[in-house]
Image 1 (cartoon, rainbow, N blue to C red):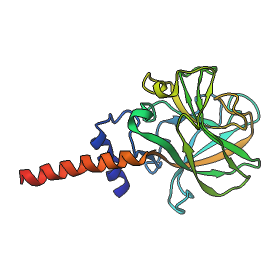
Image 2: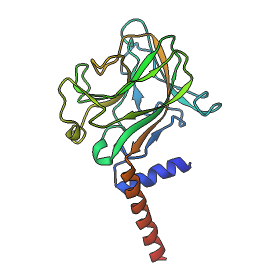
Image 3: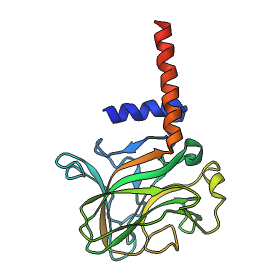
Image 4: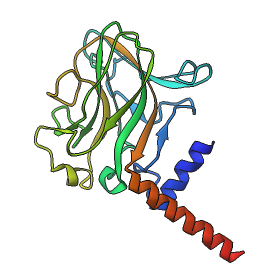
Length: 222
C-alpha cells in the first residue's frame, strides 16, 4: 500500500496522465491480471498471472510468459501498449528495474525494447542484455534506458525525440544478439514481476519539492 501511495504521489507531483508512463510506477501483478501485458499471437502460449511463488514467496503473484517450438508463439516476448507508453525522457526515467526468473532449460538474454509502431519490422531501441542461466531463481535486473546504453535498430528517430513523438509498444524480449526487436526463436519460460520505472536522482528531488509544496499549502489552509 505504501508503494502504491508513493507512486501516486510521484505521478501527481509531475502532473502526468494515468494512461501514460509515470515516474515510479510499478507493475506487481497483485491484482490477479497481466496488467495489459500480452503476446498478441493467436495460438501462442498465453501470458499468465501466477498466484504464488513470486520473489516475495508464498502469495506473491507474478506474470509468466512462455514460448513454443513452432510459430505462432515461438519467441519469448511480451509487450505493453498501455501504461508503458509515454515520454521516458521528459519524465526523467533512466532505468527499468524488474525481477526475473528463468524457468527454461536454456540460458536467456533478456532485454527491454521499444518499437516505433506495432509492425513486426518496426524500428526502435534495444537495451543491453541481462543474461540468465537455466533455472536461475528470482534475480533483480536493472536495464539502463539512456542514449549511451540503448542500441538503435532499423533507423528510428533520435533517442532524445523518439519517445516524445509517440511509439508503438514497450517489450520484454529474449534476444542474444542486437539484431531485431522481436526476440530469438526458442522454447522457454520466464517469470516477470515488479516492473519499475526508476527516475534519475534529480527527479526524486523535484518530486520531493513538489510534495513538500503541497504539504505547505495544506498547512497554510488550516
